[in-house]
Length: 550
Image (cartoon, rainbow, N blue to C red; front, side, top):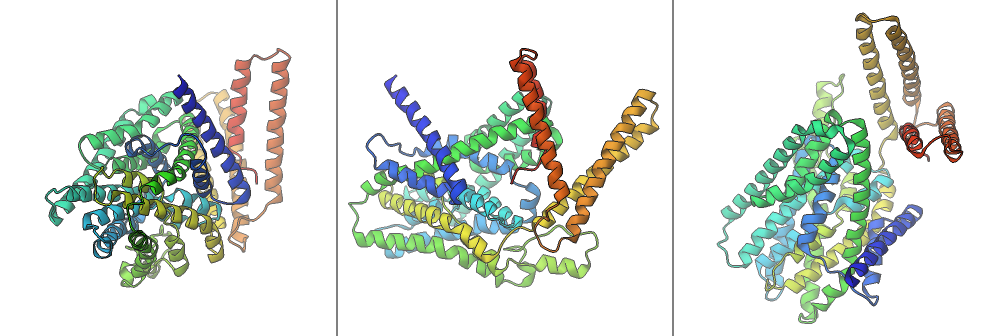
C-alpha cells in the first residue's frame, strides 16, 4: 500500500508539473519540451526516488499512442504527395547517420566496434518532431515544412529500430551479411505496412459500432496497441504498423465516423497526448544521474572523441543531406526536397514543369536542418542494448547528450530561427481555401434541397425546405463576402473585418447569456441537472464552431 501511495503521489506531482510548465510555456514562448527536460534534470538531483526508463514500457505503452495520435493528425494526402522527400529523410538519412557514426566509432574510438557504432547511430538518427512542431506551429511554420517534419517523424522510428536490431545481432555474433540486413529491413518494413493496413481494415469493418461515441473512443484507444502487438507477434515493425493504421484511419474518419464521435475522440486523444508527452520529457531529464554514474570506467579522451563523432554526425549530416538534394538535377528536386503542390485548374504545362522541379529554398533547408530534435525514442532505443553489449555505458552517455543538445539547444532556438528567416504560413491563402470549401459545401447543400423539392412532399416539408434554403443562402452570402475581402487583401495575413468580429462577439455574448439563464433555472429548481447538461452540451457545440478567441 505504501508503494502504491508513493507512486500515486509521483503521478499527481508529474501532472502538476506538466500543467505548470505548459502555463509557463504559453506565457514565455519557450518550448514546453525543453522546459520539462530541465525540470526533470533538476528533480533527478533532489533527494527521493528516481524512475529509470524501461525501454519495453516505452516502446509498448507510450510510443504507440503517441505515434498513433500524431498519425491521426497528419494528412495522408500530403505525406503521399511528398513521399519521396519523406522517404529520403526517414530512411536514407537515418541509414546514412547510422553508418557514419558506426564508421567513426570503429576508426577513432579505442576498442569500439562497427556494430556498436551503428547501434548508437541508429538510436540517435530519428528526430522526435514533437518539440519542433510545437514551436514551429506557434511561429507559423509553412504547411509544407510541417508535413515534411510530421512525415519524417512518423516513419523514421521504424527504420532506426530495424537497424538497431540488426546491429545488436551482429554484435552478438550472428551471421551478418549485407544481403541479410537489407532483407530483414525490407521484411520488417513491408510487414509493418501490411499489419497496419489490416488493422485499419478491421476498424473500417467495425464502423457500425463507431456511431456510439463511447464505443468509438474505446476502439480508438485500443487500435494502436492492437496494431503494435499484431506486428510484433509476427516479428515485423510494430512502430510502422501503428503509423500506417493511424494514417489510414485518420484519412477515413471524416467519411465513417459520426460528428459526436469525432468531437469526443479528438478531445480524449488531445488529453492523452498532452499528458504522455509531458511525462516523457520529464523522464528524459530524470535519467541524467544514472547515465553519468556509468562513465568512470572510460578515459576522458575516449568520451570526448565519442561525443564529437556522434554530435558532429547528427548536427552536420542533416544540413549537408538537405543541401546535397539541391545539387541534384532539377528533375529530381521534387524527389529529395521538393514540394509537390496541388495543381490548379488553369495551370499551364510550363507551370506544371516548374512545379515539378521546385526545390526547397535556402531558408526552408535551414529550418529543416534545425528541426532535428531527438527525444524519447532515442533513449528507449539505446536502453534496449542488452547487458554485455560492447561499450554499452558509453553509448548511453552519447545518446543522452545528443538528446539534451538537440532538445534543449535546438528546441529553445528553433522558434527565433523560424521568425528570423521570415518563414511563415500564408494565412490569407489558407483562409481563402477554407472559405472556398465552405462555400462549395453550402452550394452542394442547396443543390440537395433542389432535389428534395422535386420530390413529393406536403406543405409542412415545403415550409422546412424554404426556411433551410434561406439559412443556407444567408450563410453562402457571408462566405462570399469573406472571400471578396480575402481576395482584395494585399498581405499574406488574414485581414480584419469589423463586421465579422462584431458578429462573433455578439454570438459569444448570446451563448453566455443562455448559459447564465440555464444556471438560474437549475439553481431555482426549475431544471434538473440532466436537463442542464443536455442543454449546455448543445451550447458547447455551438460555441465550439466559433473561431478561437485571440
